[in-house]
Amino acid sequence: MPWILERMPAGFRPIVVDNNSTDGSGEVAQLLGATVVAEPVRGFGAAAHAGLMAATSDLVCFCDCDGSLDPWQFPRLTAPLLDGQADLVLGRRRAEQRNAWPLPTRLANWELARRVRRRTGLGIRDLGPMRAAGREALLSLNLADRRFGYPLEMVMNAAAAGWRVSEVEVTYLPRIGKSKVTGTVRGCVRTVRDMSQVLAR
Image (cartoon, rainbow, N blue to C red; front, side, top):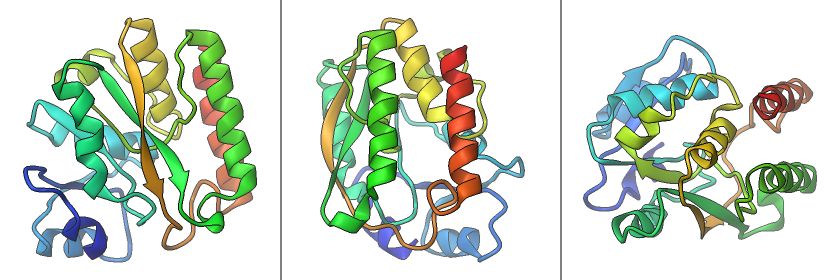
């Protein structure tokens, strides 16, 4: 958490969503100057949407807080928005080390991106968690998934609304700690199920 918040670019205000953490993350983030929002409903989407609702700026960025993505890269994502070249910008991950992105997870992401391209015509190659868009525009997408399908639903709804969706390359580092998504069989199964339900809709 300190590493993430210390690397927040000038002009960006960090909002950390505490999704029932038991390790004191919320308290640490607050001491480091972040706005902390408590979201009692468990789920990736519930946490991400709580942060979106708490934001007050015109543009918002999303980023995992596990050290795998460097917030110093946020300006890369917001530049196409500010230039009027895109409505939603996704960070296309480039692994700095081999162990940053395990092959099974990379292949699953590749297949999911392929399905999205086929369904929507978008040219995206990655459905990574680092992304940026206008706050009010995101709210207009009426995102309903509160689990792991949230980032996929964002892209699918944006495509259906005729948004210009683009990618910029971002550095991907080995995460700190065990992932709830790729770190357990249960997490992988749950993620596949949630995203399959989004695709089915």
